[in-house]
Amino acid sequence: MSYFDRRGFIRTSVLGGVGMTFLKSVSAVSPLLNFDSRPAQVSITTGDDRADLVFRALVPFADEIKQAIGNRRVVIKPNNVLIYVPLACTHVDTLEGILEFLKSINKLQNVIIAESSASGSTLIGFDNYGYYNLISKYPVKLVDLDNEPSESMYVSNERDFRPHLVKVSSIILDPNSYNISVARMKTHTAVGATLSLKNLVFGAPVKDPGFTLYREDIRFSPLAQESKPGTVSHKRPIHGGGFYAVNYNIAMLAQKLHPDLAVIDGFEGMEGNGPTKGTAIDHRVCVASQDWLAADRVGIELMGIDFSKIGYLNYCAQMGLGNSDLNEIEIIGENINEHIMAYKLPDNFDEQTVWMNPIS
Image (tube, rainbow, N blue to C red; front, side):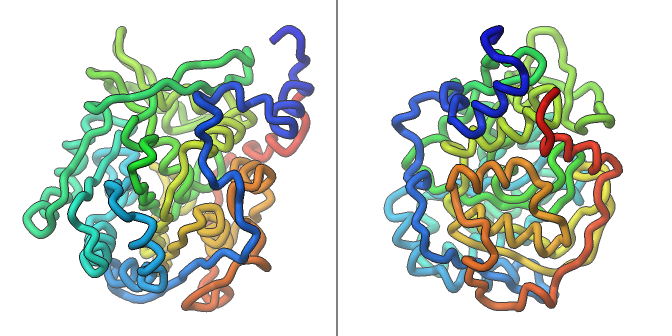
Protein backbone atom coordinates (compact mmCIF):
# COMPACT_ATOMS: atom_id res chain seq x y z
CA MET A 1 0.00 0.00 0.00
CA SER A 2 3.02 2.30 -0.31
CA TYR A 3 1.47 3.69 -3.52
CA PHE A 4 -1.20 5.44 -1.43
CA ASP A 5 -0.92 7.93 1.34
CA ARG A 6 -3.33 7.24 4.21
CA ARG A 7 -5.79 9.98 3.29
CA GLY A 8 -5.79 9.04 -0.36
CA PHE A 9 -6.46 5.40 0.36
CA ILE A 10 -9.57 6.06 2.41
CA ARG A 11 -10.87 8.60 -0.10
CA THR A 12 -10.32 6.28 -3.05
CA SER A 13 -11.64 3.22 -1.24
CA VAL A 14 -14.89 4.71 -0.02
CA LEU A 15 -15.77 6.90 -2.98
CA GLY A 16 -14.24 4.89 -5.79
CA GLY A 17 -14.86 1.34 -4.66
CA VAL A 18 -11.30 0.12 -4.20
CA GLY A 19 -12.54 -1.77 -1.18
CA MET A 20 -14.40 -4.15 -3.49
CA THR A 21 -11.08 -5.92 -3.93
CA PHE A 22 -11.37 -7.12 -0.34
CA LEU A 23 -14.57 -9.04 -1.12
CA LYS A 24 -14.68 -12.58 -2.41
CA SER A 25 -16.59 -13.16 -5.65
CA VAL A 26 -17.61 -9.58 -6.37
CA SER A 27 -19.77 -10.83 -9.22
CA ALA A 28 -21.99 -12.50 -6.64
CA VAL A 29 -22.74 -9.27 -4.78
CA SER A 30 -26.35 -9.08 -3.66
CA PRO A 31 -29.09 -7.60 -5.84
CA LEU A 32 -29.51 -4.98 -3.11
CA LEU A 33 -26.76 -3.07 -4.90
CA ASN A 34 -29.39 -2.39 -7.56
CA PHE A 35 -31.57 -0.77 -4.94
CA ASP A 36 -35.10 0.14 -5.91
CA SER A 37 -35.78 3.83 -5.31
CA ARG A 38 -39.36 3.24 -4.16
CA PRO A 39 -40.09 4.28 -0.56
CA ALA A 40 -39.13 1.61 1.94
CA GLN A 41 -41.68 0.44 4.48
CA VAL A 42 -40.73 0.17 8.14
CA SER A 43 -43.07 -1.08 10.83
CA ILE A 44 -43.02 0.33 14.37
CA THR A 45 -45.00 -1.29 17.19
CA THR A 46 -45.21 -0.53 20.90
CA GLY A 47 -46.68 -2.33 23.89
CA ASP A 48 -46.05 -4.38 27.01
CA ASP A 49 -45.56 -7.86 25.50
CA ARG A 50 -42.22 -8.38 23.77
CA ALA A 51 -43.26 -11.38 21.65
CA ASP A 52 -46.48 -9.67 20.61
CA LEU A 53 -44.58 -6.54 19.59
CA VAL A 54 -42.43 -8.55 17.21
CA PHE A 55 -45.35 -10.53 15.79
CA ARG A 56 -47.38 -7.38 15.08
CA ALA A 57 -44.37 -5.62 13.55
CA LEU A 58 -44.02 -8.41 10.98
CA VAL A 59 -47.67 -8.89 10.06
CA PRO A 60 -47.83 -6.02 7.51
CA PHE A 61 -45.15 -7.78 5.44
CA ALA A 62 -46.58 -11.30 5.72
CA ASP A 63 -47.29 -11.92 2.04
CA GLU A 64 -44.01 -10.44 0.86
CA ILE A 65 -41.95 -12.33 3.45
CA LYS A 66 -43.66 -15.61 2.61
CA GLN A 67 -42.89 -15.11 -1.07
CA ALA A 68 -39.28 -14.06 -0.37
CA ILE A 69 -38.63 -17.15 1.76
CA GLY A 70 -40.03 -19.50 -0.84
CA ASN A 71 -38.15 -22.78 -0.45
CA ARG A 72 -35.15 -21.24 1.28
CA ARG A 73 -33.90 -22.13 4.74
CA VAL A 74 -34.77 -19.49 7.33
CA VAL A 75 -31.78 -18.42 9.43
CA ILE A 76 -32.71 -16.47 12.56
CA LYS A 77 -29.56 -14.65 13.68
CA PRO A 78 -29.84 -13.38 17.29
CA ASN A 79 -27.38 -10.93 18.82
CA ASN A 80 -25.56 -12.93 21.49
CA VAL A 81 -22.38 -10.93 21.81
CA LEU A 82 -21.75 -12.41 25.27
CA ILE A 83 -23.00 -15.65 26.77
CA TYR A 84 -23.52 -14.33 30.30
CA VAL A 85 -25.01 -10.78 30.00
CA PRO A 86 -28.74 -11.03 29.18
CA LEU A 87 -29.18 -7.27 28.63
CA ALA A 88 -26.63 -7.41 25.80
CA CYS A 89 -28.37 -10.25 23.98
CA THR A 90 -31.53 -11.23 22.13
CA HIS A 91 -34.37 -12.17 24.47
CA VAL A 92 -36.01 -15.56 23.98
CA ASP A 93 -39.45 -13.90 23.79
CA THR A 94 -38.29 -11.94 20.74
CA LEU A 95 -37.41 -15.21 19.01
CA GLU A 96 -40.76 -16.69 20.01
CA GLY A 97 -42.57 -13.78 18.39
CA ILE A 98 -40.71 -14.42 15.14
CA LEU A 99 -41.38 -18.16 15.27
CA GLU A 100 -45.08 -17.56 15.86
CA PHE A 101 -45.10 -15.25 12.84
CA LEU A 102 -43.35 -17.86 10.68
CA LYS A 103 -45.89 -20.40 11.89
CA SER A 104 -48.71 -18.08 10.84
CA ILE A 105 -47.38 -17.93 7.27
CA ASN A 106 -46.57 -21.67 7.17
CA LYS A 107 -42.79 -21.20 7.01
CA LEU A 108 -41.60 -23.26 10.00
CA GLN A 109 -40.50 -26.26 7.96
CA ASN A 110 -36.81 -25.33 7.68
CA VAL A 111 -35.75 -22.88 10.39
CA ILE A 112 -32.53 -22.59 12.38
CA ILE A 113 -31.41 -20.19 15.09
CA ALA A 114 -27.73 -19.64 14.34
CA GLU A 115 -25.03 -17.58 16.01
CA SER A 116 -21.31 -17.31 16.68
CA SER A 117 -21.02 -15.63 20.05
CA ALA A 118 -18.11 -13.24 20.54
CA SER A 119 -17.24 -14.92 23.82
CA GLY A 120 -17.24 -18.57 24.78
CA SER A 121 -19.54 -21.34 23.60
CA THR A 122 -22.50 -20.22 21.54
CA LEU A 123 -24.56 -23.21 22.67
CA ILE A 124 -23.89 -22.47 26.34
CA GLY A 125 -25.18 -18.97 25.66
CA PHE A 126 -28.30 -20.42 24.05
CA ASP A 127 -28.82 -22.47 27.21
CA ASN A 128 -28.23 -19.48 29.49
CA TYR A 129 -30.86 -17.47 27.66
CA GLY A 130 -33.53 -20.18 27.51
CA TYR A 131 -33.38 -20.86 23.78
CA TYR A 132 -33.56 -24.62 24.27
CA ASN A 133 -37.12 -24.16 25.53
CA LEU A 134 -38.07 -23.22 21.97
CA ILE A 135 -37.20 -26.70 20.68
CA SER A 136 -40.13 -28.23 22.56
CA LYS A 137 -42.55 -25.74 20.99
CA TYR A 138 -41.29 -25.36 17.44
CA PRO A 139 -39.48 -27.54 14.84
CA VAL A 140 -36.39 -25.35 15.03
CA LYS A 141 -32.70 -26.25 15.31
CA LEU A 142 -30.04 -24.40 17.32
CA VAL A 143 -26.77 -24.02 15.41
CA ASP A 144 -23.30 -22.89 16.49
CA LEU A 145 -21.83 -21.29 13.36
CA ASP A 146 -18.32 -21.99 14.68
CA ASN A 147 -18.93 -25.68 13.98
CA GLU A 148 -20.15 -25.15 10.42
CA PRO A 149 -18.33 -24.51 7.11
CA SER A 150 -16.89 -21.08 6.40
CA GLU A 151 -15.61 -19.03 3.48
CA SER A 152 -12.81 -16.48 3.18
CA MET A 153 -13.39 -12.76 2.98
CA TYR A 154 -11.00 -9.85 3.59
CA VAL A 155 -11.03 -6.58 5.50
CA SER A 156 -8.58 -3.71 5.88
CA ASN A 157 -6.64 -2.36 8.86
CA GLU A 158 -5.89 1.34 9.08
CA ARG A 159 -2.42 0.64 10.50
CA ASP A 160 -1.11 -1.17 7.42
CA PHE A 161 -3.85 -1.07 4.75
CA ARG A 162 -3.29 -4.69 3.84
CA PRO A 163 -6.02 -7.31 3.33
CA HIS A 164 -6.71 -9.34 6.48
CA LEU A 165 -8.44 -12.71 6.29
CA VAL A 166 -11.73 -13.37 8.03
CA LYS A 167 -13.55 -16.70 7.91
CA VAL A 168 -17.26 -16.11 7.47
CA SER A 169 -20.12 -18.56 7.93
CA SER A 170 -21.12 -20.29 4.72
CA ILE A 171 -24.65 -20.55 6.12
CA ILE A 172 -25.03 -16.78 6.28
CA LEU A 173 -23.46 -16.32 2.83
CA ASP A 174 -25.58 -19.05 1.22
CA PRO A 175 -28.06 -17.54 -1.30
CA ASN A 176 -30.47 -20.25 -0.17
CA SER A 177 -30.52 -18.79 3.34
CA TYR A 178 -33.18 -16.21 4.22
CA ASN A 179 -31.38 -14.29 6.97
CA ILE A 180 -33.40 -12.62 9.71
CA SER A 181 -31.23 -10.34 11.83
CA VAL A 182 -32.72 -10.06 15.32
CA ALA A 183 -30.95 -7.11 16.88
CA ARG A 184 -31.26 -5.46 20.24
CA MET A 185 -31.36 -1.66 20.26
CA LYS A 186 -27.98 -0.72 21.77
CA THR A 187 -25.38 2.00 21.78
CA HIS A 188 -21.83 0.95 20.95
CA THR A 189 -18.34 2.05 22.00
CA ALA A 190 -16.86 1.48 18.54
CA VAL A 191 -19.54 2.57 16.05
CA GLY A 192 -22.10 4.54 18.04
CA ALA A 193 -25.00 2.13 17.70
CA THR A 194 -25.54 -1.52 16.81
CA LEU A 195 -28.71 -2.60 15.06
CA SER A 196 -29.64 -5.12 12.36
CA LEU A 197 -26.68 -4.79 9.98
CA LYS A 198 -23.91 -4.86 12.54
CA ASN A 199 -25.52 -7.84 14.26
CA LEU A 200 -25.21 -9.86 11.06
CA VAL A 201 -21.79 -8.59 9.98
CA PHE A 202 -20.15 -9.34 13.32
CA GLY A 203 -22.04 -12.57 13.94
CA ALA A 204 -21.13 -14.14 10.60
CA PRO A 205 -17.33 -14.33 11.17
CA VAL A 206 -16.58 -17.46 13.16
CA LYS A 207 -14.21 -18.44 15.96
CA ASP A 208 -11.71 -21.25 15.55
CA PRO A 209 -12.21 -24.18 17.97
CA GLY A 210 -10.81 -23.51 21.43
CA PHE A 211 -11.09 -19.73 21.29
CA THR A 212 -11.32 -18.16 24.75
CA LEU A 213 -12.00 -14.55 25.64
CA TYR A 214 -9.21 -13.23 27.85
CA ARG A 215 -9.57 -9.49 28.13
CA GLU A 216 -11.62 -6.48 27.06
CA ASP A 217 -10.00 -3.36 25.71
CA ILE A 218 -12.44 -0.74 27.03
CA ARG A 219 -10.60 2.13 25.33
CA PHE A 220 -11.66 1.08 21.83
CA SER A 221 -14.05 -1.85 21.85
CA PRO A 222 -15.32 -4.40 24.34
CA LEU A 223 -14.77 -6.97 21.61
CA ALA A 224 -11.03 -6.43 21.15
CA GLN A 225 -9.87 -9.87 22.15
CA GLU A 226 -6.84 -11.92 23.04
CA SER A 227 -6.86 -15.69 22.78
CA LYS A 228 -4.86 -18.77 23.52
CA PRO A 229 -2.02 -19.56 21.08
CA GLY A 230 -3.36 -21.30 18.01
CA THR A 231 -6.92 -20.01 18.35
CA VAL A 232 -8.47 -17.13 16.41
CA SER A 233 -11.60 -15.03 16.50
CA HIS A 234 -12.31 -13.86 12.99
CA LYS A 235 -14.46 -11.08 14.38
CA ARG A 236 -11.41 -9.20 15.62
CA PRO A 237 -9.96 -8.11 12.25
CA ILE A 238 -13.18 -6.28 11.36
CA HIS A 239 -12.36 -3.70 14.03
CA GLY A 240 -9.49 -2.71 11.76
CA GLY A 241 -7.35 -1.05 14.39
CA GLY A 242 -9.48 2.06 14.82
CA PHE A 243 -12.65 4.01 14.21
CA TYR A 244 -11.94 4.70 10.53
CA ALA A 245 -11.49 1.09 9.51
CA VAL A 246 -14.23 -0.49 11.61
CA ASN A 247 -16.88 1.69 9.94
CA TYR A 248 -15.36 1.10 6.51
CA ASN A 249 -15.10 -2.66 6.96
CA ILE A 250 -18.70 -3.07 8.10
CA ALA A 251 -19.95 -1.14 5.08
CA MET A 252 -17.81 -3.08 2.61
CA LEU A 253 -18.81 -6.45 4.06
CA ALA A 254 -22.46 -5.35 3.97
CA GLN A 255 -22.42 -5.75 0.20
CA LYS A 256 -22.58 -9.51 0.74
CA LEU A 257 -23.41 -9.79 4.46
CA HIS A 258 -26.76 -8.18 5.18
CA PRO A 259 -30.19 -9.19 6.48
CA ASP A 260 -33.06 -10.20 4.25
CA LEU A 261 -35.32 -9.14 7.11
CA ALA A 262 -34.47 -6.78 9.97
CA VAL A 263 -36.09 -7.08 13.39
CA ILE A 264 -34.91 -4.59 16.02
CA ASP A 265 -36.06 -5.24 19.58
CA GLY A 266 -36.21 -2.01 21.55
CA PHE A 267 -38.49 -3.33 24.28
CA GLU A 268 -35.57 -2.90 26.67
CA GLY A 269 -32.64 -1.21 24.99
CA MET A 270 -29.10 -0.58 26.18
CA GLU A 271 -27.68 2.92 26.50
CA GLY A 272 -24.28 4.25 27.53
CA ASN A 273 -21.24 2.06 27.06
CA GLY A 274 -22.84 -0.67 25.00
CA PRO A 275 -22.85 -3.19 23.49
CA THR A 276 -21.93 -5.02 26.72
CA LYS A 277 -21.36 -2.52 29.52
CA GLY A 278 -24.33 -0.21 29.09
CA THR A 279 -27.45 0.16 31.21
CA ALA A 280 -31.08 -0.66 30.50
CA ILE A 281 -33.53 1.81 29.02
CA ASP A 282 -37.26 1.02 29.04
CA HIS A 283 -38.32 1.87 25.49
CA ARG A 284 -40.96 -0.74 24.56
CA VAL A 285 -40.71 -0.46 20.79
CA CYS A 286 -40.01 -2.86 17.95
CA VAL A 287 -38.89 -2.07 14.38
CA ALA A 288 -39.15 -4.39 11.38
CA SER A 289 -38.46 -4.01 7.67
CA GLN A 290 -37.34 -5.88 4.58
CA ASP A 291 -35.01 -2.94 3.93
CA TRP A 292 -32.38 -3.35 6.65
CA LEU A 293 -30.88 0.10 6.12
CA ALA A 294 -34.28 1.74 6.45
CA ALA A 295 -34.89 -0.26 9.63
CA ASP A 296 -31.55 0.80 11.10
CA ARG A 297 -32.20 4.41 10.08
CA VAL A 298 -35.52 4.37 11.93
CA GLY A 299 -33.85 2.67 14.90
CA ILE A 300 -31.20 5.40 15.08
CA GLU A 301 -33.94 8.03 15.04
CA LEU A 302 -35.88 6.30 17.81
CA MET A 303 -32.70 6.27 19.91
CA GLY A 304 -32.37 10.04 19.51
CA ILE A 305 -28.96 9.71 17.84
CA ASP A 306 -27.69 11.96 15.05
CA PHE A 307 -27.64 9.64 12.04
CA SER A 308 -24.92 11.68 10.32
CA LYS A 309 -22.47 10.53 13.02
CA ILE A 310 -22.93 6.79 12.48
CA GLY A 311 -20.19 6.05 9.99
CA TYR A 312 -20.91 2.59 8.64
CA LEU A 313 -24.59 3.33 7.97
CA ASN A 314 -23.70 6.55 6.15
CA TYR A 315 -21.23 4.62 3.99
CA CYS A 316 -23.94 2.06 3.21
CA ALA A 317 -26.30 4.87 2.24
CA GLN A 318 -23.64 6.35 -0.07
CA MET A 319 -23.26 2.97 -1.75
CA GLY A 320 -27.00 2.65 -2.31
CA LEU A 321 -27.46 -0.46 -0.20
CA GLY A 322 -30.85 0.62 1.09
CA ASN A 323 -32.97 3.62 1.96
CA SER A 324 -31.76 6.00 4.69
CA ASP A 325 -33.85 9.08 3.89
CA LEU A 326 -36.67 9.41 6.41
CA ASN A 327 -38.64 11.38 3.82
CA GLU A 328 -38.55 8.31 1.57
CA ILE A 329 -39.42 5.79 4.30
CA GLU A 330 -43.06 4.90 4.89
CA ILE A 331 -43.71 4.26 8.58
CA ILE A 332 -46.38 1.65 9.28
CA GLY A 333 -47.99 1.58 12.71
CA GLU A 334 -46.86 3.97 15.40
CA ASN A 335 -45.83 7.60 14.88
CA ILE A 336 -42.05 7.66 15.08
CA ASN A 337 -41.98 11.12 16.68
CA GLU A 338 -44.04 9.91 19.64
CA HIS A 339 -41.56 7.21 20.62
CA ILE A 340 -38.13 8.83 20.36
CA MET A 341 -36.04 8.43 23.50
CA ALA A 342 -32.63 10.04 23.90
CA TYR A 343 -30.25 7.16 24.63
CA LYS A 344 -27.20 8.08 26.67
CA LEU A 345 -24.23 7.94 24.31
CA PRO A 346 -20.99 6.03 24.96
CA ASP A 347 -18.37 7.95 26.90
CA ASN A 348 -16.10 7.92 23.85
CA PHE A 349 -18.72 8.96 21.29
CA ASP A 350 -16.95 12.20 20.35
CA GLU A 351 -13.74 10.24 19.80
CA GLN A 352 -15.61 7.80 17.54
CA THR A 353 -16.65 10.56 15.13
CA VAL A 354 -13.05 10.92 13.95
CA TRP A 355 -14.22 8.86 10.94
CA MET A 356 -15.90 12.06 9.67
CA ASN A 357 -12.50 13.72 9.20
CA PRO A 358 -9.77 12.98 6.64
CA ILE A 359 -7.05 10.67 7.94
CA SER A 360 -3.88 12.61 8.66
